[in-house]
Image 1 (cartoon, one colour):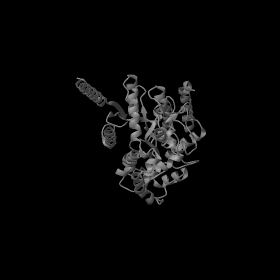
Image 2: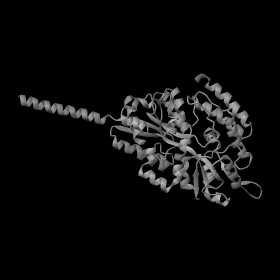
Image 3: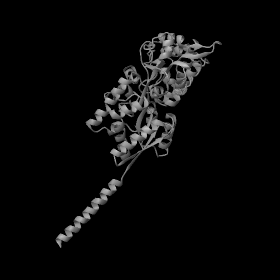
Image 4: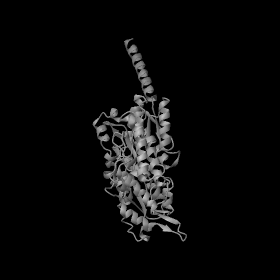
Length: 429
């Protein structure tokens, strides 16, 4: 009898264990992931691939990428969902959205998830330049993922044709203006058919402007994001240089479109362009000529702003979802994957270790332009970002466009932008 009872006990215990095991198996942690791209295309395919590989290795976690449109649209959708109580568990949003997300109480710091030596080592592994827009008040709020700097692309064939050294692009403001003058072509009627240089001023005017303020040795905002210096004489000098390129007839007049600038480059309507290194794969695929990539020409110093997107974790997600998304973020930023992402997209791999991988080493040897943005990082500065970032940035962008279209002088434009920014930021001081 005792043996039978014991046997029944074993069967019952086994069944209970199996049921417990089954329910543990069935418990999947759902991680919704907003990503800033329109549906489809190679980038979406790469993200889908990463999500599938991660889920294969982590059976209890389901990562669902949601392609939410532009960075701007993704931010609006994320904050709307946050206010409705159903935010994505993790999102890739601009590094400059950090203050906005903190002020909206939409995100948690990553410090909460750093528990092991391996976690600490991982957090310390990112390029310092990328952490400038990821940390504030002694905490880490974002993890670099698709990060960039602005670089200068140039058509080697057109440089050669103009009597310039195709392997020695301009490296100072004076050289840039001189080269742009030689590279500008006009038809018989005097109409420009090829501009020397093009710096876009739509989309992200403030960001491209930092490729001029940084060499002028001016920093637009303080680290706390509570104060700006638009009316600094060095900032005005940088804007004057940009305006003067247009007045000299070597740069297109007025507002230049961000989106069509690479196309103008492919069609040889422009010989040198400033754009994100994130366009590198696009240029490599579409330029039907030999091109080069150079660091941004300097004045008092060299340098560019960093740019691009960080991972953030939602404050309203459950602890299990937050932990699962942390696991995914740590996984996707490992050196091999960061290297693959850099090759697939043209973005800068976010850790020095990624450049030590065999894949990226070989890629850099075979295609040296891929290393220019990385090599510019030691002289790069934080992308412009403040509290109430959208409105403060709009004040600056409006000022830039007023100067570039000639409705205000650079000095007046920056004075007005400063007054508007001061008014907006007063409450954060």
